[in-house]
Image 1 (tube, one colour):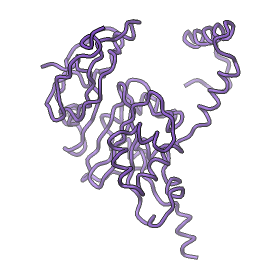
Image 2 (image 1 turned 120 degrees about the vertical axis):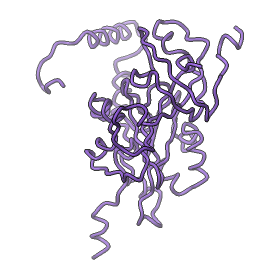
Image 3 (image 1 turned 60 degrees about the vertical axis):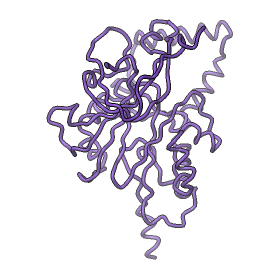
Image 4 (image 1 turned 180 degrees about the horizontal axis):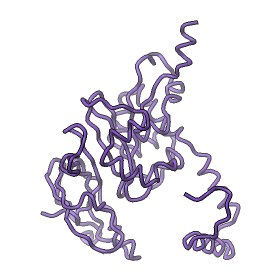
Length: 100
Length: 206
């Protein structure tokens, strides 16, 4: 099996601004609903992991999807957020959930 | 929440677990003793390993730097086996406080902290701490200054998280083992911060 099949090429780096896809597919999704459609900044690249949506269907999950730690401003995520403007929420977002 | 002591028939998934377990035992894949032993070991595990890592990091800045760069390797460095664990350690500072949640289920670094508490798995904690962290922390008795930034970490995929709390003042000269006693499970999740036990103050005044 070729390496390209095993792992998708990472497209983003720490510091890049990214937006999470706003979609509602069926199945086992590890992208929480509350963060879909929001924009944040890549905090770090965590490596690549088999796609959980595929694993849940008994498939191999390959190519492994790069996984990013993305930081979002709480004020952007929750309307009427009460707290400091600098408060953040950080999540792991798979590359195939990031829109260009 | 089910009422303790009251008879309840198995739910669908409980029945599936029992059936699968009995089949595996019948077919000789595992033994009852092995399952009971693994469960006992899991229940016996507490947050001591995580606390030991924190105390070590408080005393050794080079170890702390390695721990923040690669949490799993830092655990192994102290002799803790964490197969498959991808640990990220997040540091509390004078500017930022960290708190961990898994909004989708109950992901938790069990190898280092033991089993998660019931509230960690509860829907109120999981749904509220992401959108009103200061209020939830206050309910735990942890008041976070408005000057501090709060970082909420949703453990929603393959990584696991542990908080490196700030070392409390007044612990100068403490041994690593003594420092570790201040680091509770709640400090490692981020709903509490280490504090000196009141009893030590009384001892001092004597």
